[in-house]
Length: 256
Image (cartoon, rainbow, N blue to C red):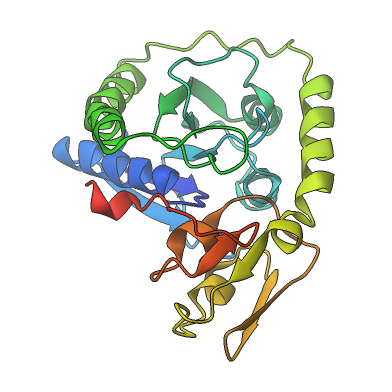
């Protein structure tokens, strides 16, 4: 009988955090506790759990290394059941998204569900277009039912077909190349409109890799960016520019 679990997540712009919140709510409806663990806030587990939910955004077809490294370091090697979810703008799950599932399997965990959940696009200033408000609301409205179905399948042991023999070396190579590109991504592309900046330092405080230093509205980026987009989307006054041009961010709280 599952009574106490944890959802472990990393979130840049808030999509994966929102899904973690819905998982907690759905399990609570069934009198099952689910602690919410943001890997940026917690250095490890503080107690033992019956099961886990792991989730984060897709970056170049993989979950961010910051998440998989935390999981590999902190999750015990024991046969606990778990769910893996990936958030992304696409509406389909790729069976090639098995990197974390394989890692967990090697640690002895039992991956019951390995799936993807469509969320609004948050990477649109360079290659893609921003979703309309109507498209954003439509996608967000679908998320609770998707999570509810995942929870039901998990508790009924209705399993995902996880191909643990799938070779992920190519996917990892693409992701590693993305990380090399991403290191200087913010430095190359982002700057600050000092007339809008209120020197709140949210960008500095919330950067998951401590890549930003803000000093009296003067922003400096180092070479540790992972392309999570948190700084440009979470700025409360939209003061961060892309290529010296104003940027319309995606703020999930405006739609939920």
